[in-house]
Image 1 (cartoon, rainbow, N blue to C red):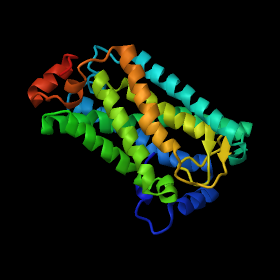
Image 2: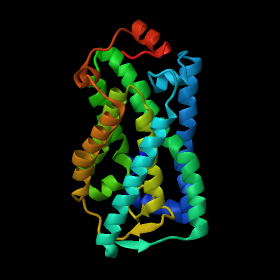
Image 3: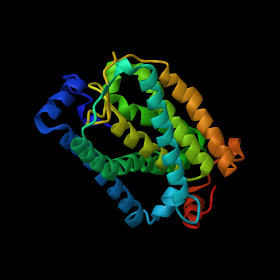
Image 4: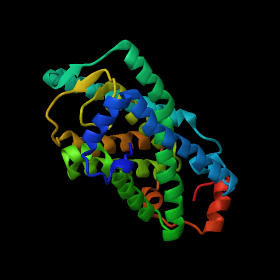
Length: 283
């Protein structure tokens, strides 16, 4: 989640968030943070459609139509893994978690999260793995430059998150690693569907399951993490173990081949690129 608006404030991010929540309430603050990004999604799609004359389907995938089964598969898979890993953490370290569930506040949170958060994550995917990756590919005339650049920029976008000020710059390994993972599955699958589903599940389930006083999602989640915030091994496990396993699973399920060409190969000229996207072909 992006908090660029508070990045350069002299007041610590977590203090600003706590102050805002005290004044406005957690749900209203969450809405204020999510709505601009949700609006940004519609502006971006409208710009592609009306100004660039590019269909939403062509911006999303090289297939003849958007594959919703891919989106739902990635969403359900990562959601289930998130629930499992959270349950394991609570089981083995119950002293680090406080049961925080209150029915009415949780239902209000769930409504906000289910409606707005997929729009927020979709905005980020279309911006980085859609527009930016395509544009940089045309400029660099290859695939590896946009893959690396968008991954780094995706990580840097999260510099304003409260986790960074609390855990230190080491947590950027997770953000940049996540950007690299999402970029790889986008290029290998020649579409945004898997990235859209994964990203939505990551933020939706993350917001609903666990909150803390120092996290981006300070909301009425089921559990509250009350442990001392430290940069733990779980960051490295996610980036270097879980993400590669997910790539392997996706590759087996969808029959990915030509890894070198899809990740580092050349990108055709703008004219050929736009013509192929319009016809639903891959380059």
